Every structure is written in structure tokens, then in C-alpha cells.
Length: 160
Image (cartoon, rainbow, N blue to C red; front, side, top):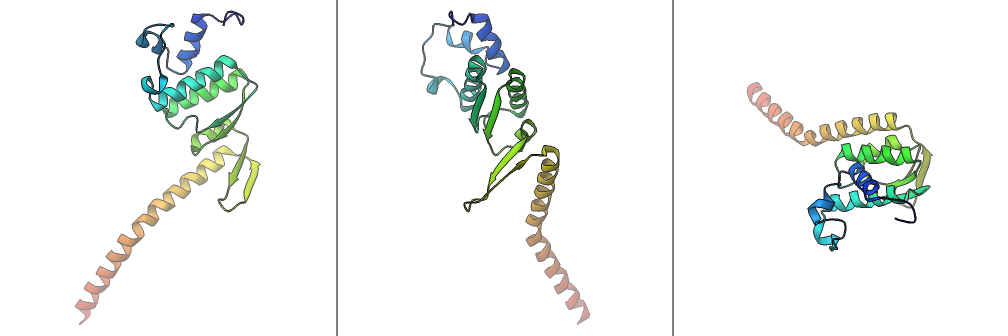
């Protein structure tokens, strides 16, 4: 840190971006040594990993499910901060909320094939919403079929 001219205040600023600036005081100060596996939740570990990314400020970063345990609002802030720093991100994720921060998508089909294309996040999110709505409707199909069969039986009895 000394060689790079980074101060404790600079580190606190980075920690505040990921909502972890309280950790220094909570854990007993800068010189406290702890096993982070025991002291941090899954989300806190992801936040600290992002803080390390911001500290090192690389040109490129590969992220694998790097926001799966943080709230969407914080995900948005971290992705925007990485963009503001000029870090190019290659992201592996199941979260459609990350699409807006990317220009291309590589999607595997599970059978050895893949599609690599430009990403129109707005269009893809609309398709995702439509897909989820249709899947929700499909879940109701067995109940509707049972109700239809019940109505048929009632109507057949009235005809007799």
C-alpha cells in the first residue's frame, strides 16, 4: 500500500462502495488477523472479493457467480463502479440482472453446443419475462384440466 500511495482512508472508500466499511471497526481495527471463513457470510465474502478487484483495478476481470449472494441494488452499484473504473468484465452468472452491463452473451446449450452473439439486454429481459409468465401459466394447466373434467362430469349428469 505504501509503495502505491494507498492510505487507510482509500481502503475505507473502497470498502464503502461494497457496503463493508463497518468491517474494520467490527473486527477490531486494521491490524486484526482473522480466518475470514469464520467471520464473513457468503455475501460478505463476495463483497470483499469485489473490494479487492477495485483495489487492484485490473484492465480485465473474470467473474464467476460473483454477485449471487448480494442484493440486486448492491450488484448494480458494484457493476457500475467496475464500469466507471474501466474494468472489462467477463461474467459467468445465472442472473439476468447482469445483462445490462454486457454487450455480448455466450450461452451453452448443455449438449456441447453454444451461441455467441451481441446482447440486446432490454429485448432479452422482455423475452425472459414472457418465458416466466408462460411457465407460470403452464403450472396451472393440470389444475385447469382437472376442473374441466369436473365440469364435463357435472354437465353429463345433468344431460342424463
